[in-house]
Amino acid sequence: MKLVFHPILTVSTLLAFAILVSLGLWQLQRLEWKRDLVASVEARLAAAPVPLEEALARAAAGENLDYRPVIVAGVYRHDLEAHVFGTLEGAPGYYVFTPLIARPDNIVFVNRGFVPQGAQPDARSDPDAQVTVVGLFRRAETPAGLQKLFRPKDQPGDNLFFVRDPRKFAGQRGIEAPPI
Image 1: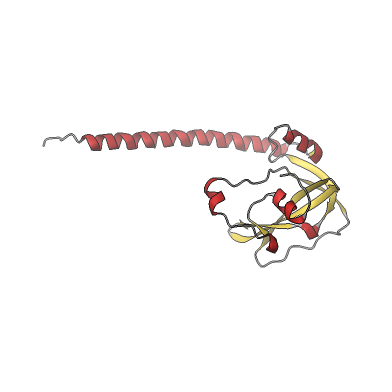
Image 2: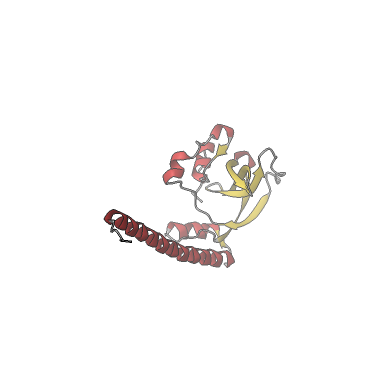
């Protein structure tokens, strides 16, 4: 039996092999990045909460504070809450984002949790009650690429949003809030 050399087949095989090796290396680099990210988040989660004002100042200076515990006191404005479509354990519903008024010039939206589709949110606290919230600092979502092209359009008239962006919620309600 005589072996026949096929240059096109050889080049194609070598090219496919090179692509597979580069994808494997990329996955290993991504794994290392992901491990570093998880370690960073776990360290932040274990840290003591900082006042929201301090966290905002540090974020404005360029520090990454995602998942850093923060503490803020104020009054909820349930009449200005926004609903962001999402899923939890495969069930559709929405996340309730309620503005917390710390001072007239300091409003922050708090993710109060998930409500399954068709269910009513839990009872609201006294509208004038002062509350202290310890939560995690999170930046607004900014869709990119295909997610930006194919996501549904927000429906502010129905109080339904598809991106967690407090600037949009606040703008629809005539107030200002930081993008966290």
